[in-house]
Image (cartoon, one colour):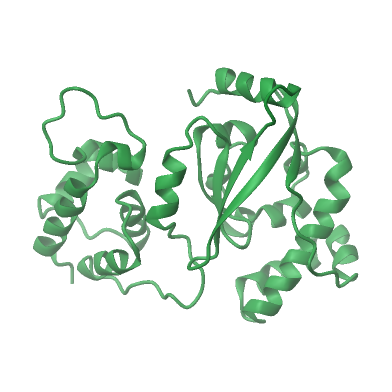
Length: 277
């Protein structure tokens, strides 16, 4: 059963503890609340202000597990707080035995401060969990995929449009890299893992994957320099730096260009033409 009183109090306390700068929002000059406004939290949780407000007012229906996960992420809860929120709403807490989609508050705080830089948080399966505005401008909205297509490695072998944003000279290496990474992950997580399921699907659906999989290559790591082909600004040669959250097996990927290069100028142009501005 949902604990409406406990839930309302917990949500209010977490909302009031957050400051706009903690989540990449402007403070403004006329802020009367001690923390975030309800409409700001609702936006971070990707839900209506009315829906969120009713939860704080001990009203409304029991939120689904997916909605609870969105609230936990929007309020930047750590794993203990997330589990408490699930229990308050009458749901069992997600297991912690394997990596999940919940991005740590620390990683999100860093991401929130990279608004003028292409960056993303990805899972060990190559699923984009969060992107900055310029991250979306660079590669498109990668958080909207569902099912196996959430994995870039899966899309690489099954969706030709995915490769259109990458330099053709990199395609062969990237195919080997994705197959190698998936093989290593399957060995780590086991035959009942999501990595094993993706491998089975790709063996059924992609002849190219079957060919590179048969090589049994492991240990092919991503290159530091990524070469993109953007439909609006053209070729981009970007350096990719990675920050790892070992607890959740998440990577924060940050893409930058060497100052003074054509790629640096094109990246600045991308900031101007980006529809996310």
